[in-house]
Length: 588
Image 1: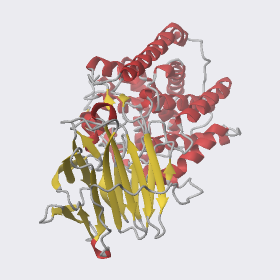
Image 2: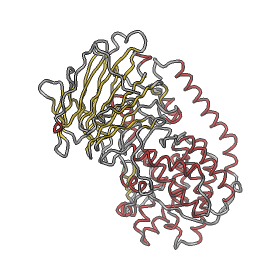
Image 3: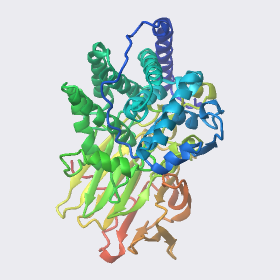
Image 4: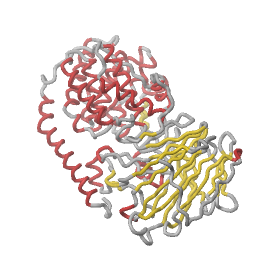
């Protein structure tokens, strides 16, 4: 941890470590011995139902797999005559994808006798070679994904199969389900643990002789959904992408309950109903999600599939207070801002230090963005992407507004680098002015302990959506801002499709959008710089881009005002306030 960590932060981390150690010890003392008993947990000899897999499939990938070419997580392995399960994995991400068997859906898409035989052969190899010997295959969340994949794609493997393979398949599946039931507690909190519980419910509903597990599994699922899905529909991790990953599994599960003539649990229905509107909340005009807290490229195919199940299709909510986000939009111009504190430490391994960062899009063009994370090779970029400097907001003294676990041994023990400190108090106000303009203001104290600074950001979006006025205030949290520790950098990361040229006075820039619209960035009295940046969330990998940066010292410049406006609008300049004047507070 950082030397500047407070006593409260160290205490919070210690409690988290002790709880995790207690859960692991309890699992070793109780769950593992019982799970090894061959008769424990009941046996099954058949599947009752195969749920629908909503993920899209690709026949081309099926041909590659048949040819022995396995491409996962940016790594490609050509097996030749060897089994992929005998090859040393090139990365943990590749191994998890291989042993999760989510790729079976591509073989099912081809729907030929050859691909069905290929699927049976690969599953039989995994069983014969004891795939559990691989550390990645034993991880609870990988086991859960494999169980869901095998059950969903059972028709691919079991139709036209012989009795011997059918029995081997069912024995292996039963053992894996038994193993999962006693290792779910070892899964990392958040999405991994929720996936394990979802897999348990799938198994209880779809496998014969498992009826006695349906009620307790559904109860655990309901409790976990109520804990992890916030009242406004966001996920406790604050990652927008978590909603897509969950709904793609929960929607078929809801149908499985109906197919078994059982009413879906109320918490499941309520969670789905809450999450659906949040999908529209995070969408820009081009259909992509805003890049906050671990969000990478938007899987448009999955998102379109999920939205087809949304019956309401109403206007997105504007105030996601529980999730910590705000949205204002006018005339197809959208602003989404992060106004939330870090998530609980147990689910913060992927959370970012991006408080008060915002994204701006006009029609189908994204203009201001955060860097995000790539779809593959995330671990190599994660530390950079989580920093405040990778977000469109202000940083102080090249320091992030959140503090992460820095110790290598602790990171390995915790399976990541959770957030142990950051903003605690975040004040938010919204207002709509008489001319239809919408005003959003928020402040956070993430820099208060170290540098004595409160950052306050105010955004005003005009009624026609062609002008966004911003104001940054750097106020002392107690007494005065720390001398020699008041240097700030105000960053506006641009989407790679935006071309930027600084004007001659160096107080602004001209931005050209792909549709040839021109927007101007005006910093008035402050000098702007145009520097290189990186956009990590492109579908084809990280791309170079630009960022607008304003540097200054908060003890000298306590307020920065800026404007983004569409040049065709020819807006009338708003009256400028002097730096000595007090800002007008938005109405509550």
